[in-house]
Length: 513
Image (cartoon, rainbow, N blue to C red):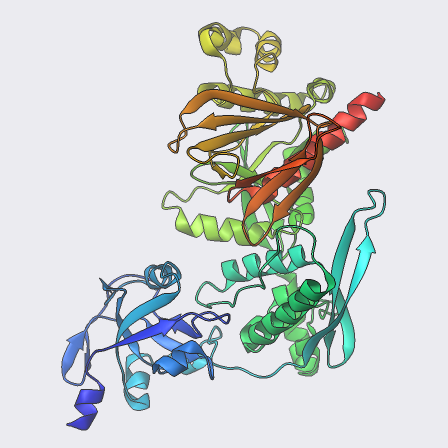
């Protein structure tokens, strides 16, 4: 009788700590499935608790390994697919309420016979001697900008020097690859310059982050973490793999030779397929794609880049992104099977674009992107739109001349977002060769009359805040006045910073010509 009561559905509320919720979830990747009996009652297949962090919030709340999840925050998830359950948990805020049914180990084996042999099981945990005992203050060559590196040691041996933004990129890529793993948060990022006490607090927070994440063997031995820690040896074997012996080396070598196909849509609607490695970064993948595009002149490739297509916006992939992971995640979530990776122009200076157009392949890509942008009203054509569209098939050169005269051509207009410059409503940020434009709009994105323009001479500093997910710039309109800060809150904050650096670089090159 007591066993039946223990296996009856019961509520468990887990309050998030700095370590997260402290549990992992596993289960079927598709919805539905065959009914199975638990204590004489039939249930559809359920996601279950695959790991509980020792001493963590979940263990303290009474959650146990093997618990089957019936509800998440009053949402019934019996028979639900894995991603649905994980999404409900991630949207829980600071506490998650789970209705679970506990099962014995024997019953768990009957329900999920493959549990013990799965390579993605995060229950296998071990302590890794990883520390960050020191940090170093550095200066970027050329710009002289100050930055800090955190010195990472494994088994008392120095293995890597990493900036905070590299930790952020690592976390984002790990979340893509290990969707079922609930990662701890990175330490909070202060908005502006940090003092020595705050830097040391960040160092300790990053050390704790690495300790917690590397404790999961499958994550520590994965290529992402091995690359981050510089533990992969020449030939493809990881530091963890080398220790396993010659047979393990041979297996790692074979795995390293495997190439994956990535599909990229060009502006002219062609789809090119390039063979890449799963953990190549953006530059390596882009080079493989460029070889398939067929530019006629060697300098043409620098005016294009890889972008990720989302429902609202296309963002340029960063140098530390892993395009294949972005591609595989977007591809699996798109029911139409379309790729989410695009090749688009990456240029603000129209004079440079005109020069690059001497390459017929580059010109055709510029032209096709202009046609697409005009058709989707991304350019402010106004009453000229019909007249310009008539030139599309009649004279491509004249069409491009007309399009290049439009206000938003060779500019990046970001989706409307919040800003501390407005108490109510949102703003639309546009980045051009000459500076930035901030236009007021409603919370729904309807443009309003108020607009401010900031030349590069007026802008003194820019900053991307990883913790707040915001982009900030400091400006002054009068050299005798104190500079002011404007903060913009957008999921594309890193792309905003990237656009500023690119536009300023092109503007400087344009002045020196």
